[in-house]
Image (cartoon, helix red, strand yellow):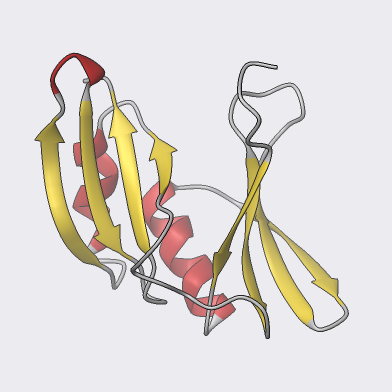
Length: 122
């Protein structure tokens, strides 16, 4: 097994606001899934595709946080997505920054109060 990460959840306070934010920043679509005590918007993914699956989640056990683990989304150029963050209602925490041979990162606070990263090689 190359990478054991298969799923992530991003806590929300207002799931519709969060869906609108992530749709704008990453130009992606979601699938609504309702479960007992929880509402989820799953990020578009494919079992054959790269990366872990994940969802925006609103429920009693999912609380947004600026502390702890950071999820990094992949990008061709982080400046594209980080450039959409403020218009979509988030806050840029770290603009596009070189990490040497490992490419570039940027970080933002989403509309729900989560710290999220973006990574690209260029």
